[in-house]
Length: 303
Image (cartoon, rainbow, N blue to C red; front, side, top):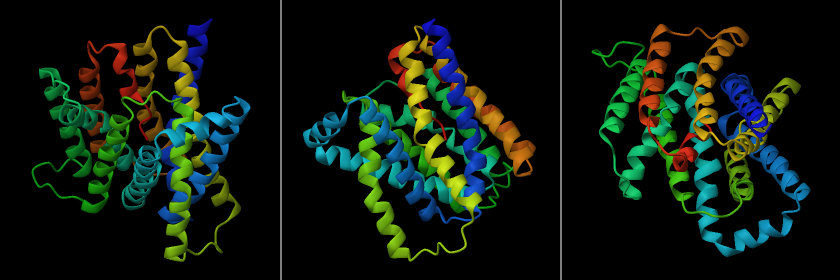
């Protein structure tokens, strides 16, 4: 029974994550990246706080933060504040199919950063995986013109790649964190919230022309990119006895996302994007071969 529930939760999480690239683009039609960040963080913090209170973790939230205030301040500044601000800007500058596919290479980035900061050994197959995946990134970024190396938006590509460094860094900082995962994520959002709204005030953002559909889109992002879906995925990993099977569901997400982008917002999907994404997925599959379940956290959410 637990395995069926785990599979169901995992599939729900993957299906929801498949929609977020489309939701990002719809939201960015009316919101600036800073506005989108501030509202989405507020929605996510509200949802996660409600979940924690339902689970009677209110006092645990306070105790956890007081135990390591500077640590949780750093986590919150990295994710969600810096990570999502940079990711949203990348989506603003690039087609969503490109931004999402490049961001998907973060697990490869994590392998390299873990070697530097955690002293983990990089296996021969990891180097092969990195080479294949980053070849895929180049194919996507140049739309197949590998020799010419011409980028439509060098800044957008740079930001998408930089977001992978931030996300991988966030998980490296979390490696030895024994606190409740939902509480940890909530604290990050609570820390980031005043900074995000401070940026909104500093930039003097205009809110007058945002429609109801825009508000619904940004609420959706807050609920299902940053909030509820993380809880579903965590629940699936905790229930299953076969972490690899659940983790491998995540490979479905980017391809579903391309279909949704094409059909819902009419974004043309370049053949090079599909080819590059296949390179990235192949690299990730090679990377995961013969990995133990203790590394299952490496397959957390790809945005």
